[in-house]
Image 1 (cartoon, rainbow, N blue to C red):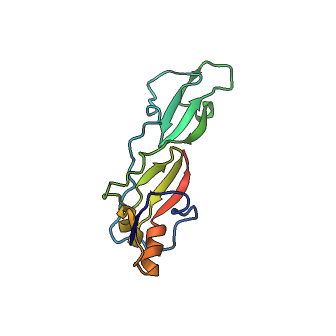
Image 2: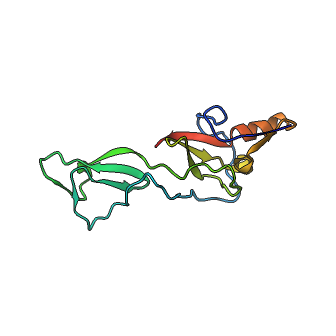
Image 3: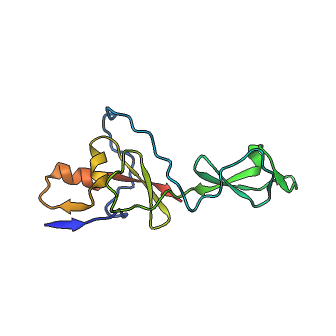
Length: 148
């Protein structure tokens, strides 16, 4: 018997990453394009109060505290808002890799775990004939990272 699964708080763990040995082939985190993220910070641009920028996949807003109406490279004028949302989880994809991040329900970020978990990031149908180890790998393939 099989059942289609998509990431959700009930099938994805919000605990810290499982303790496993490092993968033998290193995968770099994928910076997914975002639709909810402002343009990247550009030091040559003159930002005004309220302008938002993307810096390192995090959203910051221009909020000078000295009465100024402009923001410069001075980090004290930028306030962190939240992380950018990565692309939405797609249960038809079969090419997720370790460290890939996805958004779910437009506000939660999950990351594909490395090592033996990685292949289970691409399995969207649970097989009830799996053994306990396979079920554990499936249920723990995606880990909750935070809000976006």
